[in-house]
Length: 444
Image 1 (spheres, rainbow, N blue to C red):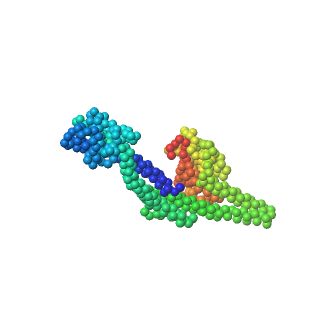
Image 2 (image 1 turned 90 degrees about the vertical axis):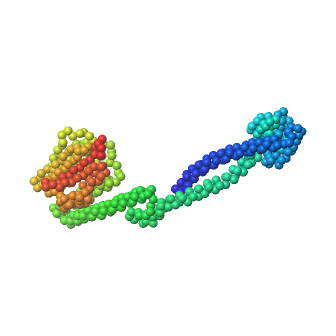
């Protein structure tokens, strides 16, 4: 069901209900006013007959029983009956011969009664020694009421159907901007991710357009990131594959020490390729929607211990320092991600940040602002200030070491996913990297 039809049915049903209630109220009030008017006509007719009786040259009681007056003589409207009787109940005069013969005139005022099997409405007026009764049929009253209802129903129905037609047209005009937006999206090519431009859009639809454009922008950024990753990965993987192939060819053509050396180089290339593929897989998992939450949460001391065990390969030393009385509060980050982030920082410091004197890499643990802070300091040559922003770029390297250039990019992805923070400061004595991760129960 279209939105236009749904809105028309909803609003149209509300219109019909409101119009029905208003019409019923109007008809009820109209019927009440009409019955009051007909009753007033009975009263006016009775008083008029009383005035005519007072003007007769002789009393009506001496004119003899069965005296007849025509409706024209008494000025009685058609469809009404009039009866004049004495206080003793003698019929002194009737409006016409067809008038009912047994009108009850013993009670003054209005009275509903059955006369000859038909319902009548009567009014009795006592004037001197006579009673004057006027009456009309309820059937004629109802017929008059129906005719009035039918006469007033036609404009009401026309107004109702006209309102529904205007509602259908108005909804079509109001939903026209949505139609323009749909048509604009339909005309776009599948690979077009430029922001959608629609002039003269209503204020209510502008947030929808902004959200749509933000989605297109995020999609474009994601596709560009994936294209760049695919290109960089293809370039980075081509070199070790080519080297492995070359070493294997050399090993096939040689023997002895040369063969063993070629096989060793091929094995080293295979290890490098394996590490690169593992880091690519880790980066894809962190940036994707895969869940790492296995219910296991570690304190910052446990994370530091596990990361030190994984990063210490005997090629360098790591000295760990803790702020006194660190709280034993678990991190609000899956343990695998926290350990991976800190391990990559430590391995990067061991690989690129050792000084010629072999001074150790330092790891400082502290809690600042409700967050666990891991500070990694090396004694290497440091990084130029203009290169600090490139440290988290995929496959970016300074040319030193044999890393793949993905370690810090993985750390940055983990930080963005878990709501942490990552800062780099290049000092004269090396590079300082600060990693902050949220703790359970602390405000972010």
